[in-house]
Amino acid sequence: LRDEKSTDAGEPIRTRDIWFTERDDKIALSMKHNGKLYDQQSDYQRVEVYETQAYGNMLTLDGMVMTTEKDEYVYHEMITHVPILTHPNPKRVLIIGGGDGGTAREVLKHTELEEVVMVEIDEKVIEACKLHLPSIASALDDPRLNLIVDDGIKYVNEASDGSFDVVIVDSTDPVGPAEGLFSVDFYKEVYRILSTDGIMITQSESPRFNNKVFKEIYQVYRSIFGMDKVHCYLAYIPTYPTGMWSFSYSTKGSAHPLNGFDPAKSQAFSESNALSYYNGQIHAAAFALPNFVKQMIDQ
Ligand code: SAM
Image (cartoon, rainbow, N blue to C red; front, side):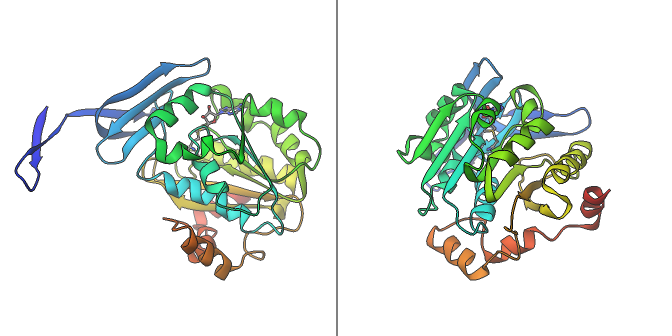
């Protein structure tokens, strides 16, 4: 333990000099923390929560950062409000994964919705987040949420044609239980269960870091939804590799992320819900892509 600073009253603030590091074979991201609050091996992955000094409590799965208390709002607001505010008449939303609850929390801010279903495979993720990330997991006990602990692939395979207006795939990276969530067959099934104007949203990795997966994702989506039906948008997430993160927006019918977007409505939604990242200007700006990203998508 080291006393690095003191409070106004002169009492030492005690911090510990220990680091969490997420390692890839070429880069790493480190955060200083005060210790581990949760550590369980589930049937699917190792679930851990650290008390970091810069980002608050942080969920990791198999050693990879999933979300932190201090920057989670970027990912969760962007994966949710962009599709729901551009669907002509959203009523039924399905979340696949998202066990921390952040996406469900944001979805439930849309009070016009009639049905919100979330299918998370790992109950240990839910348990860890309820215990140690309550500001993110708050929606998991909301009676308006139909929370199902099961494999999202199975759920989608068994769902009826046209049964959801928005499907949000809030998954881990394409390894372990989420591997099947990155398969052509899975996306074909998502397409089938989308309603006429349905929208599928996925996190589509970092174009700067996960180049191969990023390119493949857009090729696959375009082969299923059509060339002009798949759009990419970006957000800045400091605790993900490179900080540059992408989301895909694929539509079955007439929905469009910019033509169907009303800046005043988005701005009003942002203000009335006191959002921290999403607003009318961010919505439009997020679809402006650097040339190297456009080229990767168009290759
Ligand atoms: N929301 C986080 C973020 O900010 O990046 C990351 C998402 S993390 C919570 C993704 C979740 O998908 C994990 O809890 C994982 O257990 C879940 N998952 C992985 N494969 C799944 C599957 N086949 N069906 C349902 N959930 C799955």
